[in-house]
Structure formats: structure tokens, C-alpha cells
Amino acid sequence: MTPRALVAVAALVAGLCVTTDARNKVSATGTRHTVLVLGDSVLSVLRWAPESNKPLWSAGYDIVNEAWGCQSLLGPGCPGSGGRSALQRLQDHRADEIDIVVVGTGYNDVGDQALRAGMRRISAEAKRQGIPVMWLTYHERSVSTRRSRAHNAVLRAHAPKHDNITVVDWNKFARRHSTWFSHQGVHMNRLGGKKLGVFLAARLDEHFAAADPTVGGARAGN
Image: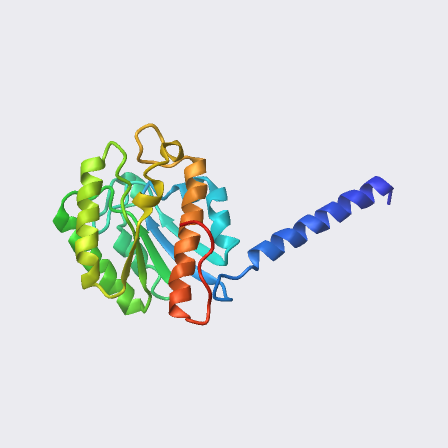
């Protein structure tokens, strides 16, 4: 084998080792966790921009991505959702080992009652599966400002009624960063996707650290 070929092989092996090491990293609690993401086209950035997931898997979180365009909380949504609601996607994973479900859908749902019903039924299903729920606030600086503000008011008012729902403030984290979003302020671009990954990793660290008092604080990203 020529010297050039030996260098190429060595570089390939080194790259494989780095990749394997990164994917084997554990979360702040010292173990990997499986995270189910329920989202619509807003969180679908985790699908079409896979680099958005890097802050998560490198922090010890394996993502099961159920973010589908036009998804609604309880209804079939529009054709892009595949005709299945967020609740049905959650039910599909009853036999799987999920550690937590992250909810970032509801942008397509209209009215306070729809959101309250979605919270109630998703909370009940998650409780049946024995997993906690982390619910993202809705980004308000967009063409859907009025709806997102109303949703956030409902979310904060009714989350305390469900002991397995924790609200995390994505809106506060993202509201001053218009460059993370499209011109309408609804869907994220690749930069926004990366920042979403950082935000989720930090909030997940906080959640699992709180569940294990022997663990220190969360990583940067708050």
C-alpha cells in the first residue's frame, strides 16, 4: 500500500472513531435517553435539516421524530400529516421504550378548547405509558402572533392541572432572533434548527437532572 493510501485509511478510521464516540456520549445523567418528538411543519426542521439533531444526540438524546407537516393535536390534519394526529403518533409508540415526549405541535389547531383537549388527552396517554411530557411554548413573532399568544396563555394556565406536563419557553428563547426563521416567522431555517436542538438539549438536561438529584446543572443553552 502506498504512503498516500495509508494516510487515507488512517483518516477514515479516525473519522469513524470520532463519529462512534460522539454517538455514544451520554446525557448529563450519565445515560442515553430516547426522546419522542411530536411536531408539525415547524418542528419538521429536525427532519429536513438533520444537523439540527446534532446538539441532541451528542448530548446523549436519541430522537424518534414524529414531526409531520400539517399535523394537529387530535384531528387528522391536512394531507401532509399522513392523516394521523399527534395523539395517534404517541399511541403508535406504546410498545417502545420512550423516556420523554416533546410536544411542539398545535400551530394548526384553532381555539382554546382544541388546545385544552389536546393537552388533556396527550397527558392521559403519556401517563398511561409512564412517560413525562415537555411542551414547547408557541413562537409569537410571526404571522400567527394572535393564535400563538392565545395558545401560550392556555398552555400556562392549564399545564399545572396535568402533573406530567412541563412547559418550556421556546418563545422566550427564540423571540429576539428573527434570523432563525423564514420571513413569516413561523418555520425555522437551518440556523434556527440548530438553535432548537441546543435549546431542547438544555431543557432535557434540566429535566433529567431534576429527576436525579446527584446530577449537576444543565449545559449552556438557556
